[in-house]
Image 1 (cartoon, rainbow, N blue to C red):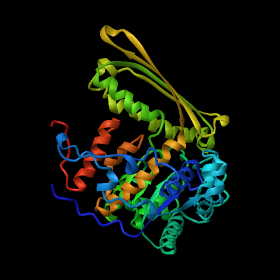
Image 2: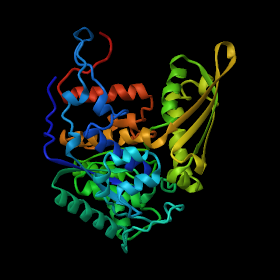
Image 3: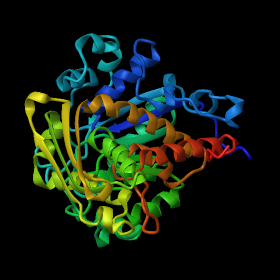
Image 4: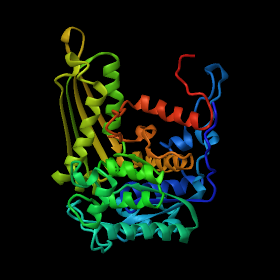
Length: 433
């Protein structure tokens, strides 16, 4: 197979994070800085730890992905971004209370010099937060122009060859697809006309990134790049986009357990999921409008995997409920309970119970690193538009109107690795050998 033409990962890669002072982003920055100094292991990161089989099974070739795929080196990443609070990343990480002081102290000096640029913020879109470090702009279009200038200035000041932008900020209030999102012309007009109830701050960040030739990753369930307008724009600019909503705790379990039920042709009567969490994410999701955005993302998984239209006897009448409860004492240590009522031979009922005591930011931080490195790779390989080979990382994988998303974690992982194999000129693997 012919090797993909991939530009080398020379020079500095700017990782611009929206929500730089949040729990996920600050945990990602601390861990990446510590890993590149050999002070911590990047556990959970596929780009840093996973191997990839090349050739036939009897050839026994299993190099690490980073040894054969031309990814950017951790030492070449420069960290920056925006936040609606002014604290540097050291102060923000202390406030988040995800990592212990001893871990922050490993890279304290570097963390203290990473300071966020003022964020693009509109409280109508995230009602529970009161930003103090925000941009002033008369229209959404002016906001975009200010963000574009930030990107250019950051790139020049830090000597970056390339930029990737990732949204690691809060979940915005729910909005369905509107006329303003149907084409690039309609989106740009709405920005200039300041249609503030249809154009969210996250859309401004995404537009600014793509306009500046930077891949954009949507890590929340916001309606943002998953619109015809942004598909059109990313194709025009030849820029990769991907999302949405990092797949970390409870939904990751669903993308493992639901395929198990389906492959064994076991029935499902009901799936009740509830979560408790503290931190800023929990506070934001305590607002019903923001929770609605998250709920739509989490509910889509089971139906897509189980295909009730094809298997009405097994999955035609599922009761699926998702709850998220703000519980400040837990801080970042989320707990997700699942009660799953399944049906077996001759209709006999059984149950699965799952109690996942996870650390949200500890699970999400390696995803941020992988997505930055993989979308940078995609950009250097000339990919553009929706990167569905990165669906592995998302609760609600982006897809256009002609395709259905793939939610099965293991199919997603196979697709990711086969895409990497094609990039480096290796045969894809169908496991028939």
